[in-house]
Length: 232
Ligand code: CA
Image (tube, rainbow, N blue to C red; front, side):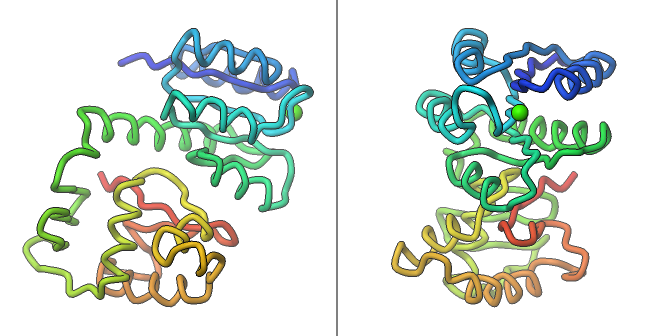
């Protein structure tokens, strides 16, 4: 197995031990940091493949750490939050985090999130962002031509639906918040127009998903946003 390095940032010792034991038994390499200063130091000196970041640290705010790391790195950041409020997660995602886990979480959940991040890494390697054709399962988007296909059939999308699909595809594996999406699609004047977004997302899904009630491509994160998942 190709060993990846995971930086675990957590001040709570039992939680940190649970995470590192899990990573160790599943053959991941890891580093630990117990506060924000250490986190930034370890992230810059060891260049980890994935960062698990507790939002409630004694020194720096988690969001501040994400903003700092994002000035030089696109490493997948999975936020771990004891806080049940969605507002913290949304703030972290808007600051550039990829995903989130809410405490208490199971070992299975933790490993599943890591696998999603790993798939994102392997997908973005080779400078996929610069490529003009995107492929995910049966979905193919020809960015240059401005067309999307499901198998051989062209999807008849409205301009907004197409923009939405492109935005999600270019951020595959990453949870995008409602605010992020509405700002990218409609501009800042339309921020927080979540009701419109829902309508467009529903019509896009009807065209894209064979079973819109159990979507294969676009995941809903209730109260938070949406994510395109890598279809195996
Ligand atoms: Ca904590």
